[in-house]
Image (cartoon, rainbow, N blue to C red; front, top):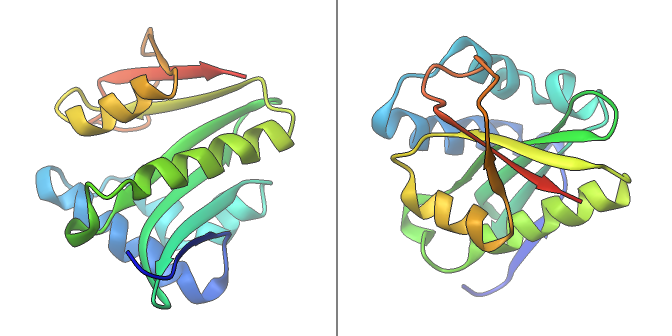
Length: 153
């Protein structure tokens, strides 16, 4: 991919955050209320709370995204991570995940957690590669979520 770079949140990418995530979620599931809360007003739901949304930009077009949502002190949720279908398998998710981990470390976070689904084996392989460990699921944030993973920093 030529001219690819990772950048933080900018209002001009807010609609891409929604569009990219809606596309992958609706491949298998329905958008849930918790999705809509984060996706329709990312500034309020994520940015103003001290979180960040990263975008993979190719030729001025957002082709991937990942959010870091702050929870209790020192804990961030990795959420809304997706790559546009035509760009999957090129290592872009690795770049986004590395940016998210770096962000959490800069914020002196203790842990990053995520809620996923066991059917997402490519995502699971990515999380395993970066040292995320499966823990007991104690979240009802997403109906589709059936696995929780944590990365201690």
